[in-house]
Length: 113
View 1 (cartoon, rainbow, N blue to C red):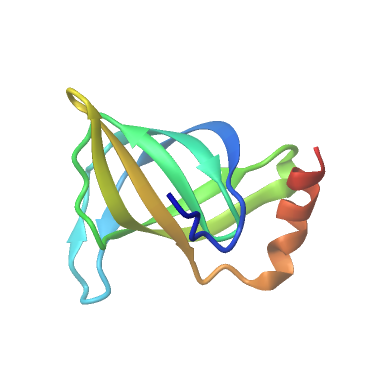
View 2: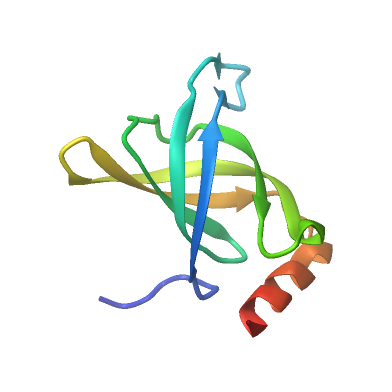
């Protein structure tokens, strides 16, 4: 299969929790409390696993820390893909939305490791 990503994904192990989801038309879902395990990241997106069923085209706020505490990204994440990988476990593909290019240095430092 041909790789279509603009930026290389790197393996990473992060644990996050989604507490609420929202859409651009002011639809909001609160009290989600879905634990997720981020498995890979790139400048444009993340991939994660979760036992929760999450709706596509919804957004959530995330704080992603790559390395030291100075390397924290505060970003909006859009869920764009879902795949069942085993019973009660899903893999999600997401894009990072509206992340300013001034934060590219965080990925530069992460890629050098």
